[in-house]
Amino acid sequence: MKLSLFKIIIAGAFISTNLSAQTSVIEAIKKNPKAAFSYAELSVKEGGKWEGNQYIGGTFKNVQELTIPEAHTDHSSYIRYEGIGLENNQVGYRLYLDWRNATDIFGKKVTGLVLPEVGQDGFESYHHYAPWGQDILKSGRTIGIGSYGRYDEQNDYVETFKIVKNTNVKVVNEKDQSYALIAYKGWKTWGNPVDLQSKLTIFRKDRFVKVDLNLSNSLSGLCTGIVAFKDIPMKQGISKNKKWGYIATYGPQTLAKKEDNLGMAVFYPLESFDKYVKTKSTHTIVFKKTKNVSYYFMGAWSQEPNGLTTEESFYQDLDQKLDILDQTHQL
Image (cartoon, rainbow, N blue to C red):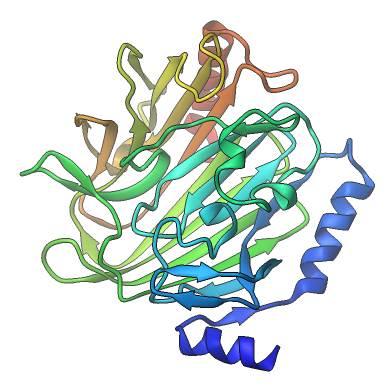
């Protein structure tokens, strides 16, 4: 065990394995399967070894904190389902902890906790039907739903996290909310590199995630958005007092059945809004030059138990949330 930890440290990873705390959170949720819950998870392999960019052998262990090893990239088989997970009774999300930095949706067909079992047999199984649900969003080379990057106006493209000095991740589970803190040091796009800290919070209610972004220096082009699919229209909404807006899509845009429907939305504060851009693959909200911004995203799957099963009910839900944001500035 000491040798394995030594190898991981040499590879550039620092792992805080407060396993008992993580186990107690899981046990408490499973003890009351019908109760509302929130859950954040990070799971990595221990006991194996790095061979180039691949982690060979080992078993997955939940951890609370991790500095991403220098060798890690997409499909390295080191982080379970390749990123952090956020879940409540209605929905699950994962954000890739590599250069892609995209957010996917885990559609749930059950209301109980599922993330601790997802991806235990590799990163292919959860793309297919399972009794609990599946990964339902094909992000491709986009930021998926509600993730963040920097809009490159010259090339009409959202730049992700290809060049970062190092990335540290921490997950926290509290009574009424769970969140992931991700610190990117030396994020380089064009111009001088910056440090970025993101906080992604899921609550014990509803489907939305709050995103808080804080930068070391003001940055132009900071953006979020929704992956764009052919023949799926984008709709926009503006609150009564013009304080908040949303972009949203609804339709057959999942990896599940052809007749399956998914609604996706991003809510953003108009005081931070610069412009909307439709790139080749992403409906993009570009923020004004800033050091910090907060916004929300959500996905609503038609197969979710007691979910929003029609386009009308989906947009009614968005408009209700828009009214709340207009009055209180938070959901």
